[in-house]
Length: 193
Image 1 (cartoon, rainbow, N blue to C red):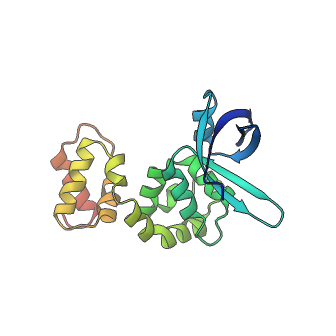
Image 2: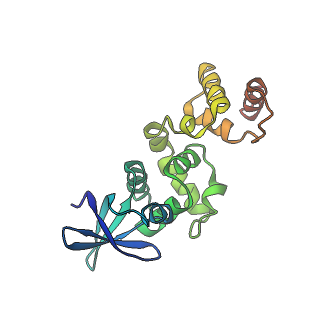
Image 3: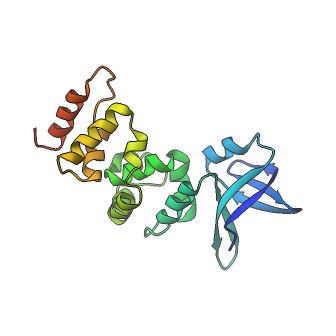
């Protein structure tokens, strides 16, 4: 299995790059974010997933191990293929996608071409617990200082990480709100205020 590539960019396409590793060119399909990150680099390192099919060997590349990890997790969902998982990671950063799944936000998943309500529901149903466990710290890394305080306060009150994240994601992005007001709104969103 090819786990990573380290080499020079030989060619760039709309959703792929050819990476020259010691004279051998590997065609790797990438997210739009990964393509923009590597396009001006002299040398790149990509974490890869090799998909083996009867008619093709296809490499998918990622600039971070987190992106690769959530990509491979997405492949475990019934009806989600590599191209659709790559589209999801092109639309959202790995941390954002994990937070969307952990909080059960079907509407955000449905904004990606090829994802309907049924598919979004299936992704959330099959991955919510996995993502919540594996990415438990994700909401805090996404949140600002005040939101991190709100998450901590909700955790101290006994709410799970997923419940707290769902409440914080639902908060208005008003920067004039105090931490106390955000906690009050989060509790109201959780139905306990």
